[in-house]
Image (cartoon, rainbow, N blue to C red; front, side, top):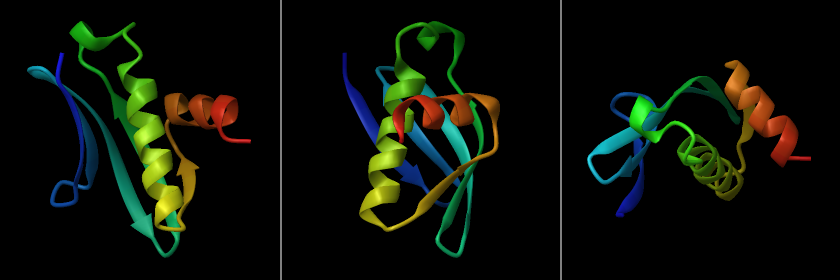
Length: 85
């Protein structure tokens, strides 16, 4: 299994490519706030932890850039609540 993380800034989304599938999170950047509007994992990646690994990459990226994550979608909000305290 090959996995790579990418900030696709042209489409305002973070992507986690796993083999031939992609989980993604749409985002907006406003000042030092990173709004996570929507997180999607295709059916073949659901239950594999792909969305959680995507969120961890996003959190690491936000931290390295001094950004505050503002979760808008329910999955992002639940992940942030469980993992970023």
